[in-house]
Image (cartoon, rainbow, N blue to C red):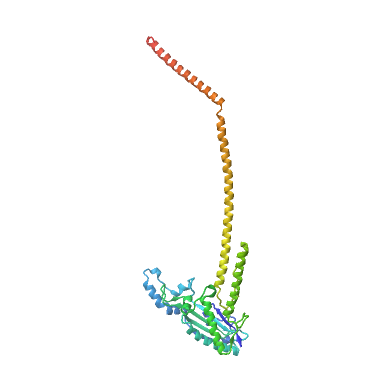
Length: 369
């Protein structure tokens, strides 16, 4: 028989997993069939994992404000790392692997073995809480873990990091479309599929149109086809010199990825990025050409105004030259003569006045002038 595999990111509600409270979709009469593999309060788990490294880090600090009082709280409030992760694994669905059926019990057996292998397979993922639920529609496994890396030269020598934890386990991503976590989830699904096969259950990978190809091979083939389409579009754009608005319509078409599929799209994204850069460059050049046209128009207008001003200045100079006529020169000479005549008269008057004053003084004294 064939069954699907689900690997979902959980909310990490440990109280729900431990049935501290009961949700509506839970059958309380079956809760006793649940399995709690392990549970440690997360603060205690952090102290166990990072307590020694935290003490060593704080001892090196010369300033008190650089010490870390509570590493769990620091990570909980961080925007770069999460304090823990939860993943939920399930085989089939309520119709073909119902919890109350024989197939449901088979699913529980497989998931039980899967968890044991999971812990061995992932030494950098500290599982502090793990629960198998048999009181919901379909058996499923909650695994809550803290990813950590050791030997760090920055911050704590042992610190939280999902990316580095998976890298320490030999899993490295290749861009946003195929992250370390995506690759890791795919690997865990394949491990679960191997256990299922030992019990006669084949992994049914839905949304696959060519079952003889593996998931990765099929998606790589689809990616290659879309890359070819983009390349053809770019080539047509270059040959036909399409308008900028048409080139701008080239966008990245998202691949129909599901939780079952991980595929490399970095090359595809690069081609689309190149097309968009080409559009931006064309737009910039268009703006520059427009600015150049406007500048030329302004220069032409200034030239016209300069020519008009030059012409007006020449006209004023001509008028100034015409103002100095013979009549004006003659009038000017006549006025100058009058001015000299007035000045002579004033001078004579001044002399006569002076002479009169002296004469009157002499008469008073009985002297002759």
